[in-house]
Amino acid sequence: MEVENIAIFSKTFIMANGNDSPIKKTWKRLLKNKPAIASLIVIIIAIILAIVGPSIAPDKTPDADDQILELANVNPGFSIKLLAVQKNREEKSPSFFHKLLFGKENPNEMIPIVSYAFDDSANIVLQTFEGEGRSPQQKILPITDVCQALSITQSDIKIKGDEASFISFDDKKQTASLSAMKKEIEQKRILQKKYYLGTDAYGRDIMSRLLFGVRVSLSVGLVAVLISLTIGIFMGSIAGFYRGTVDNLIMWFINVIWSIPTILLAMAIRFAIGDKIPSFLAIFIAVGLSMWVEVARIVRGQVLSVREMEYVQAARGLGFTNTRIIIKHILPNIIGPIMVIAASDFASAILIEAGLSFIGIGVKPPTPSWGTMLNDHRVYLLTEGKAFLALAPGICIMVMVLAFNMLGNGLRDAFDVKGKTI
Image (tube, rainbow, N blue to C red; front, side, top):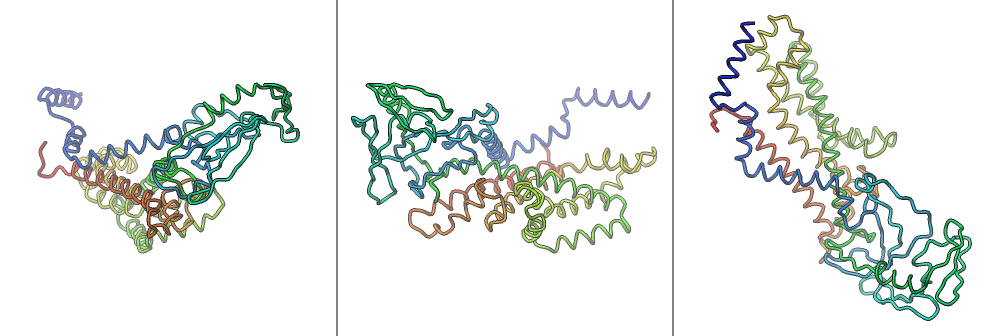
């Protein structure tokens, strides 16, 4: 009872004197570090883009994989007219959250055009864009086929006055007004599209694929860090707390793993996993299992110093189990260094994933990854006017890695309270 009264009195005294908690003091020190806060803002923006990217990207199809081969490798700022031609297939309407997170299949075939005109036979005559430096080609499409999903087996269209009769994709006989379809084409199906960062070799929008790539990098980083922290904290805690033979065995194993370059270890794990599981999950595991040794070494050193503290000795004297002492008393007091190494490992995970994708054993196409995009377009680095294709994903990788490293440095300074005052 006396101990509780003393604790209540101490808490009341601290609150009365306006003293901040250690967490609040750490947060105040972090706020004073402008580069770290700027990096935190960049990371928050990246997280938001990873969540809502498909809903704000110019190309809202899954994996931003809407290919228009005639528009391959166009320069940033390129603008073109597109005719949206209804595909002859069944339409599936995904849920709102599915569209928000993964995008929606484009129900139309996009045809780049230079000009168009309607003839007297219920057709639209197109001058199609065939690529930079190539002459336009003439293409004639029935107006009904542009606006409606027609039956594949019964594609005949009968025109009578201003009406067109046809069999729809679901095998139903329907009629539609030609003048209404012409109006629909002019108002809704002739689109002006601008490629702000250009396109890749398959005519896919670079900006959209970069937005989708944020999700790959952050998700790989998050899962890999969770795996490395779980293994590293467990191994480091056991080695540092029990010492002796246990410590020697664990440190021997850590040194063996430490001697292997991280990227080579990740490659070996990735090859060992093979195609037994999806490539996305395989990358998570490969990157996570290649980074835990650094966490284990740091945690071990911290536990070795903390285990001799008075409060740990007091916990032993009270008869607490070793598991409770490690979880309840030691780990909460070394959370600062763990957070710093987690931020650093996040940056390393992004680099490793980009490296694996760059050499072709990372996330499989068409899922966009910054490393894959860099690999696909590295040949353009020395090509005049096309270097942006490789520079864009390279800059994204650099910005994200720099942001996590600077945040890690800020956390290190914020948790280092020696000789510092608020």
